[in-house]
Length: 196
Picture 1 (spheres, one colour):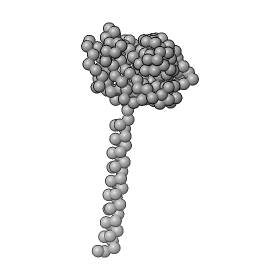
Picture 2 (spheres, helix red, strand yellow):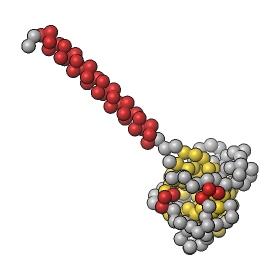
Picture 3 (cartoon, one colour):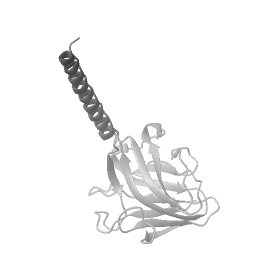
Picture 4 (tube, helix red, strand yellow):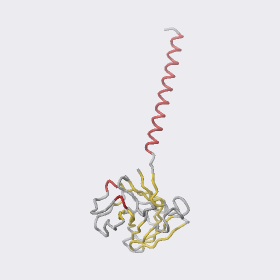
């Protein structure tokens, strides 16, 4: 084989290798973009976010107020203290001009929790504008599969495809997302979102 042909094969091989690497990089970037989670804010607890001072409701054995010292993002979070050994529940109202959010096509709901106790799973219950969604131990709720960390922000997610079928619950008009915190203590909540 002549030296000139060897050089040509070598150059063609280099070009082919470079194109293969560039193609692999492009595919990896597309996969990364596709796996990037798209989030839609339901409630971020920020002033003047459209909630018209209706951010939350203390549902059961909880006392809540805004906090500016421990926040996940923005200028404030929601601090909730549960004083009962069985914890407490807070209802979070989504930001919406209509007073409700359409979760009928949502895949996941997430919230960031700063837990001063740690190692807790968190329960989610959905309520519609008519108050449908149940209460107490009726099993019309979903527990998180991930536990909180002590004194750190943890993103808690619930897969809505695992949410139980609840009689008369209108997923197109969810007005309250109830968060049950299972132990007595202080919790900070921030950035309630729909994630896909």
